[in-house]
Image (cartoon, rainbow, N blue to C red):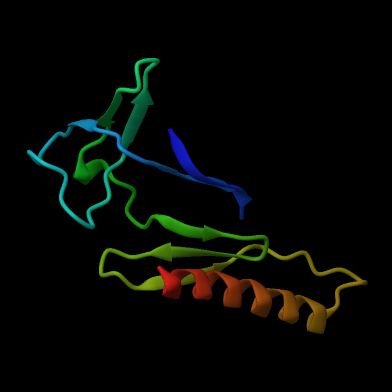
Length: 119
């Protein structure tokens, strides 16, 4: 049963499922550890059973996962926990406006970093 649904907040559909049990099938951990991210597949059958199966080993994890993907920049998280902003390629032509571009980059970085700080 879905308790709360905020449709399409920044491209995501966030819901809170209440009173559910989740069976976990993990590769290395016996129980899911708090604050640890697991890659896998969550299934929900017609009888309201939930099962999570971890799909890849920690060593196969992406080296620097992307935590933000915008129009002008992407931000990756390094293994030491630091964030690394990366500029996307920009096409500079006759009508290129430096101030407008810089403002758009600033606004996007501000949005991305604000979202990361609030987490």
